[in-house]
Length: 387
Image (cartoon, rainbow, N blue to C red; front, side):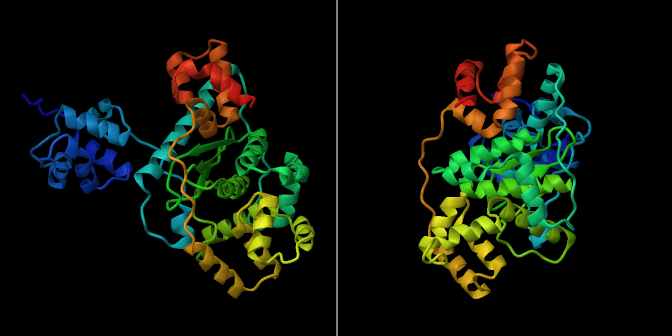
């Protein structure tokens, strides 16, 4: 015996689908496991004010799971108000019209929820999350600003040059940015959608990196987004190698790219390192320098181009060569739950949750939501914070 149709609000169903980034065809495909009779026309009928059918309990549960919403939201009279996604610099700076994927939209929602939790927990702890970041504009000189920020943050060339592992380098830079009052999250979203995104708040501005990206790519994106925070202009940002249209947004992206490049690969240090190599422009030379600075070969090549050490033809040729090479396959086994929790949320955020839990200021459900794992992992997570 099938369950009865439920008196949900049709326009809320449509709103939930649209803000989650799904087409009616995609939803119908996802619901095939519920019933083969559910088609795109069925989904449209559910959402149409003049439609005859409504979803049954099993289908509604699946919709709630798909849209990452509580079932109760579908019974509201009107769609709830939500802050729109951050400014899409991919669209504005590069002229691309492709909409954001559901995974990208979910990452934005997840990061915002983590920020809300950080505010709630810090209030309980009596802490001030205000970040001490200078405010700049795009007329600033990226190289000079990068040098000042390296000094202000305490960035060490000695530390930077001794890393043998890009993941350890990423942790060093994440901790440094978080020490300035920011949060740095890592969430799964496609790099085809964006390399990273950020949102500025006076209290707890955050950067979000894609776990789908290589660690050296995340390092560059971290400081690209940090520049966005200095500008007080958060957004969803494209691949840094793209060609930007002439617009204010394109100018912002070029500024943030230049800041990140000068922060990670200052000219004097690059010149000194390049002079020690017999052929710095060769593949081996570019690889050596990329390891030296813990950035990608592309960042080194871009710095060479900016400095006039290579011409546009050489740059494009190398780009084509690298584009033809397939990236190495990653292992199927993922990290343990405690490692994943700290990796995704960052030490600053996790430390807030752990301290509030230890002091009995937040209940286990909030601990679980904040850490993304069961409370049985608390001991392991504490160990990760000091690893």
